[in-house]
Image (cartoon, rainbow, N blue to C red; front, top):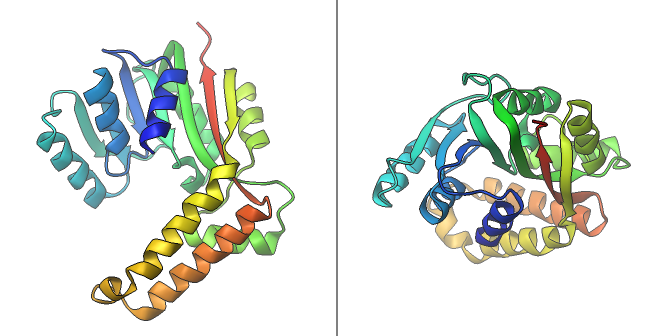
Length: 229
């Protein structure tokens, strides 16, 4: 993820002073990187109050409170004014959205002319069966996941100029295999916090994701697009 931050920042040409909106910011790791390493002013939004509290605490610990703001926000309906940001950034968050057209429309609205939308997301290939989709969605509690072509068409349809796309699907198996191995390795520690059935369901779900990625059903992609001047 640290390398992903570096690559995305380079592709998006992020610079000191850039106003950045991090949609689905999680615990704020990417926001801290953008502020601490590049001097960007970042607003992170998320629907989880617990995650936002941790993000805010970590920002203060890193002495980045003057550059970072974290707040509750739904990326389907942003509260920010039109043309408020130079960059809209997101990592593996859009997959959780119910209406991805609306999410990208909102990103377009709050971007200043000439601004950049840059995001990564897990994708499901268009020929994946409904039964496999259901199991894939269950693990991440997603209502629907798109393929790369769906994002590309949406971006073009909303007037964006697609600058770059990258297919990083080759890394999905390695990443999720590692997560599965860590769950198994730490099973005894986890049993002090959660029940065995939850761990088993997690292991089964991760195994199915690894198998699906090996079969070319789950991928990972990066998209960089410009809002016309």
